[in-house]
Length: 265
Image (cartoon, rainbow, N blue to C red):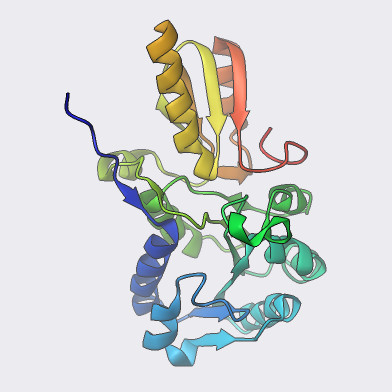
C-alpha cells in the first residue's frame, strides 16, 4: 500500500519570501518589529532592506504607535510580533492609533493560538481574534496554509485600511493549489474546499487542515461526505456563505485555535 505524502510548508517562511518580492515592487512598504525578526522569520527583509526596517526593541505598544506615525507620513508599514502581544500588550494602541483612526497599518500577529506551546500559557493567543473583532473598523485575516498566505498578503497590500493578519508558528499541510488559490482566494469571501451534505465544518487558520482530516475520518467510518469551509477572513465575515451552508446542512461545527467566545464560533 502506497502512502500519500502530505506537503508541509511554513506560512511564516512563505510570508517572508512573498514580502521580499513585494518590497522590491513597492517602495512605500516598511517593516517594524518588537525585537522579534528572527522568531517572525523576517531577518531576510532586515538584511536586504535595512533602511526600510525598524526594530523598536521589546516595546510592542510603541511599535504600533510608530507604525501609525509611518502610515500618517504615507508609508505602508507592516508591524510584527507574537499574536498574544499584538492583541493584549498593545491593545490600547491597536484600538486608538489604528482602528479608530483607520490608518493603513498591517499588524502581523505570529505564533497564534497555542502554536508557541513550549513557552506556556503566557504565549498562548486564544483571545486575540475576539479582541480585534470587537474593535470598530477592524479587519481580521487568518490564512490556512503557505500558499493562501502569499495570495492574501498580496491583496492586503492593496487594501487601504488597518488589518490584523494572524499567522501560525508551525509548518502546516499545503491545502491550496495554484489554480484553486488563483480562482477562489479573495479577501472577504470564504472558500468551500469540499462540498458534502448533512455535516459541515467551518474552520479558520491552522484548523482548516484539522477540519479536512476530521471530514476524512468521518467519511472512512460512516461514508458521509462532509462540507469543509475555509473562513480566511474572519472579519468581515462572509455571511452569505455561512447562511448558505447552514441552510443546507443539519449539523455545523466551527473549528478554530481560539476561545469560542468572540472567535469564529
